[in-house]
Image (cartoon, rainbow, N blue to C red; front, side, top):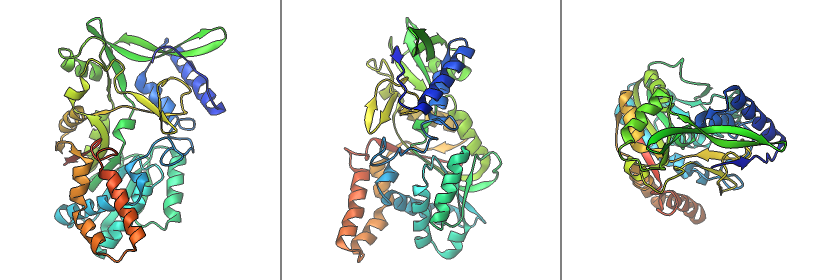
Amino acid sequence: MSEQVNECNSKSNQILFDIIIKEIDEENGFISFDRFMELALYHSKLGYYTKKNKRVGKGGDFITSISIGKCYGTILARYFKSIIEDRFYKEKQIVIVEFGAENGDLALDVMNELKNILNKVLFKKIKYMVVEPFDSKRKDLKLRLQSNRAENYSVVPDLRKEKNLNGFVMGNEVLDAMPFRRVRMKNGKWVELGVGFKRSEGKSFLIEAERNVQCELLSEYVSKISDVAPEGFTTEVNVGLKGFLKNIYLSFSNLSGLFVDYGNIHDELIVSNRLDGTVRGYSGHKYIKDLLKSPGSHDITANVNFDYFQEIAEECGFDIGEPVDQYRFLTNAAKDWLLEIEASEIEGTEKEKIINQFKMLIHPTTMGTSFKFLEFKK
């Protein structure tokens, strides 16, 4: 990710590019990589995740467990049911908070299944709360949920006003989409990698830029790996994770949390051949190497550091378990459901469709081992 000419492929991307250039100029030639991601992915009108483009599924840029079909939400509903009946059945209200809801598919799939499998008294206690910070996306989500005659929903910008909640937090591929910093071991010391620019022959270039590590949270992290990081090693650090998890902690009295994502444990990340870390982009189901090219037109992501997540979650006060393969988690949660499907009178083609969805979710060559479930509690 060295020097790259930006050939913006749309008017909106060009406008966003100009905004980024202007901010870099105002910040003395350097913005951190997480700030670049905030603009490229989450600019309120021009960001990759805020524009009305198809991102997920066939015809999009990537697939998720949710986009495969209703199977995923159905199984998660069974998981929620077991915890509701064991832990939350006495509460006056039980919330299910979802981050990163995209178009609301998971919310609909989970609540439709809970309505079928919970008794009416318990189901009436449930409130499904979607957290969406952007106005335009909140409006779209509300319309989608209303058009499907959804019950017991709310769409909120954040959790800051919510206190003493009891229930669940859920996020599917949320952690990998959070903005992160980048650092590299260079000549025996750490440097932070950000984004700068230069102009040549009437064209603007976004370039990889360096500075000394200044962020306290970043300094704390790299100090812990200095003895094992080889020369040239590059990694990503989500310095916003602690604030994110702390806000969740403060909003709940009793919580069962669940984040699902791809990533690695610490030792798997500290390897000498990762000169560019795990950062990468996707567009049209294809790998994007030039991350600084045409900001706003593609996704930017990196592997989640599971050990770092566990450490920060514990610092915030949560009890947290080890990462569990999606294969193992879903197979365990789906036991009763699979028996019901087998014994049901569902037509053969429909039954086959459901089973094929399940196989794709758990198969080791698709999602079964690459995705991990991170459970945490309060």
